[in-house]
Amino acid sequence: MTTASPNILVVEDDRETRSLIAKYLRNNACNVTTANDGSEMTRAMADHRVDLLILDVMLPGEDGLSLCRKVRAESQVPIIMLTARGEDVDRILGLEMGADDYLAKPFNPRELLARINAVLRRQAAAQTFSAISGATALTFQGWRIDFRLRELRNPAGARVAMTSAEFDLLRAFCERPGRVLSRDSLLDLTQGRNAGSFERSIDVLVSRIRRKIEPDPQDATLIKTVRSGGYMFTPAVEAITVPINGLS
Image 1: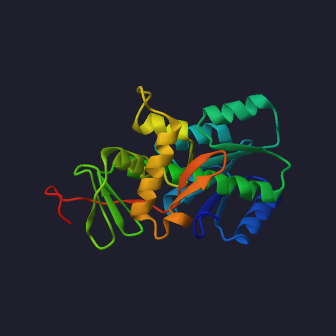
Image 2 (image 1 turned 60 degrees about the horizontal axis):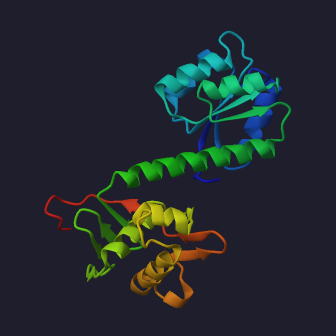
């Protein structure tokens, strides 16, 4: 799983299906709460933290589509819809109501687990990007990059000299950790399409940055080259709070 023991709420009126889903997910490191209908779902969400909601479309009383719309109006909790009907119209309606994914019955529990993992990964990535994109400074493996002061400091706290182009490229990497970034996209993010901008300039800048931040520039681990893809910044990145005077 992408997070340790995520809390999953399964809303399914068929007892056998509900039990099978709950058992499989519990056997795969999930904390599972179950509900038979919308009323039980509401109580469960009030009593427990829910990291992901599995919601059947065909429920007694208020149906899953209506419940999905209500949940989405109040919460960004990820939702996976389940239904015995595999028609496109149901899938489209579920997604329009705010569902993150949709799975038609019958399904393999392994596929459900894979979709849960994928949805949780997307949510975690979105939350990370949201925190990073609004930050004035970031840290990775002890390094600190300060956007206001436009400076980079190594784990010992010493300032590392960088050109403006090097700083802008490192910032682009830090704001998008774990993503393969093509040379074209890096040009757009840093230099734009100005006269004289060309893909080779990205390679030159990456080489310069590696000499400054990599333990072994000849065997880069922080900025990896992705064959036929571009580059990927591998460290975990966190936003940090920088005091007004810029001192740590």
